[in-house]
Amino acid sequence: MMRILAIDYGEKRTGIAVTDEMQIIASGLTTIPSATALDFLKDYFNKEKVEAVLIGDPKQMNGEPSQSAEAINAFTQKFTGQFPDMQVIRVDERFTSKMAFQTMISSGLKKKQRQNKALIDEISATIMLQDYLSRKNMF
Image (cartoon, rainbow, N blue to C red; front, side, top):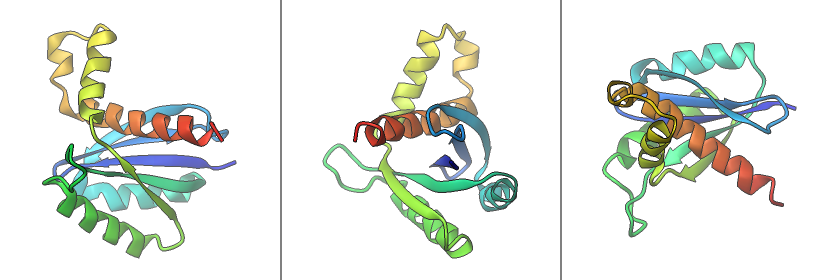
């Protein structure tokens, strides 16, 4: 099997998570500057077999697009232009940052470590991916 990769795109940083080859476990891969995301992904796809890419779809509580939707949609268009054969799945990313922060607290990370926004982005991508895997494996 091939991996599934998740992208938590932000204007400054992008968190990336990936599954194992059996698509059972989601793990944080890295956080990179968003300006380098497409180059990073091109290099990663040359090294690893990836079946699909999840990209967060930011929404407000009422279901309307959030403020960051425009930037993420622009990134998604660039991504599909550069990787036209890659399956892209948009997933709801509401609350992933809050869940990531709560995970950091539950894990016993010190306050200074919890202020690491790059780690929050990576954990957010991991949460999106694990949630997708959980729903996918239900059927």
